[in-house]
Image (cartoon, rainbow, N blue to C red; front, side, top):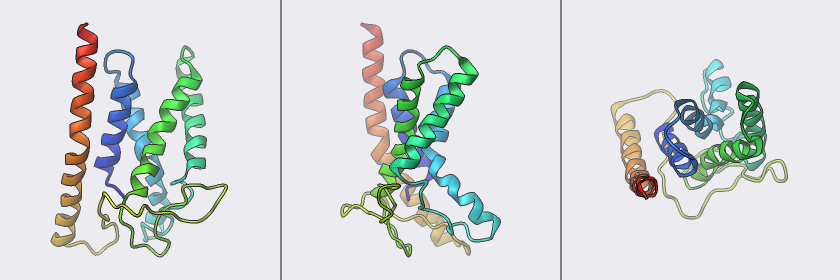
Length: 178
């Protein structure tokens, strides 16, 4: 799996690309949370002392992305009432699915390597033959070599995501000035 930093940067890229004007903190925050939402499947595992026990299950799928998009857009509409539910469902869906997309390209040594991208239509786990992101250590015990390993992964994510984000922001700035 990519790190929370990588997923957050992906949500930021989606937000920056789709925003209409200006930075709106609530929308940006929801984009970042939505991009990390599939990893909330760590919470039940943490309660039983095994963080990865339920990880890379149905939360990492197209089906769960669609469900999350509908729930988030409906909640956003209930809170604001003056938005396009379909537009926000697409926005939130892209943010959540970006997580699934990144994890598809991530090295995974788990028992069920990969993610169930096509759930509920197919329960098989898939992983890309082209690996872009390294595995992330998420089980105790932790030591300095594992921390350095994860920091290396975060550096790779920054190197992958910052150039497109910078280009997008420059393009949007030029667009605003014309």
